[in-house]
Image 1: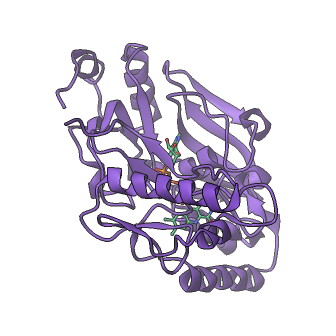
Image 2 (image 1 turned 60 degrees about the vertical axis):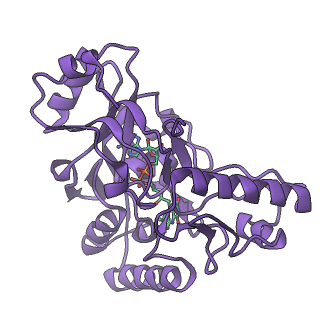
Length: 305
Ligand SMILES: Cc1cc2nc3c(=O)[nH]c(=O)nc-3n(C[C@H](O)[C@H](O)[C@H](O)COP(=O)(O)OP(=O)(O)OC[C@H]3O[C@@H](n4cnc5c(N)ncnc54)[C@H](O)[C@@H]3O)c2cc1C
């Protein structure tokens, strides 16, 4: 993918790391898919804001975390992809507030809350994404979600403006947050509730063990593929009812361990994974009448030719 001139111009004075044609497969969970036309790891918030302010409005901007809920199509992602580096991964606690950089892993946020004797954030222990990704997805588990604990989040908007939004402004719904197009969440503040450290730690251990037993944690996957639809049956039950557990297309497979997870068995293309997901949706619709909705975000363009 040739890099467009406006991108190069906007990045001319960037202080962070700039990588044309960076392969997403090197770091996203599925370990496959295309390249970023340009991957930018900003040095700090001011660096990101100034690059976005210089970037012509028609150039798309895509924020990526660790790609734990993501298919990047094989033709790659045009425009600027922003990946927050370690400088954005700090976590601090002030009273009952846990402040996390946009790149902070969910587990680090949960550990900081535990160490400070704050409960309510335990569920983040089981979510392998970043704090920014958790806000963008309204990630949740065990009856709790980010909307329940978020105080506010700071965004660098597509035009380079920096704003802090109170939680209510995101209009959270199930696995949905109203993050403006092209915005990057650079910080989030979560509220915990004073609790007993031993109990918080025990709950986190329970979550870790439960995950280990039920999810393909050490495989190339993208987390829950489909949202749980309204009604009594969860997505995985519908996938099972349609006989799709273990179903394969090429090197992509529906996990035997958890039917709502897709796997790259090694060498799968993003097209194979997406086609498998669509095949599952079609079979579930035909068998149960339920139209499953993708939870995994699919980005980029298909491979041409
Ligand atoms: C084994 C496994 C278990 C999982 N369990 C759960 C679970 O229990 N509950 C749950 O909700 N999810 C779960 N997931 C899915 C995933 O971990 C969450 O959706 C997570 O919040 C995604 O974070 P990420 O940083 O990987 O985002 P990515 O996958 O990189 O991106 C997902 C979306 O978030 C956006 N995004 C990411 N970072 C930013 C940012 N800084 N600013 C703006 N937008 C951003 C991206 O543009 C994209 O639209 C699981 C995944 C795996 C692999």
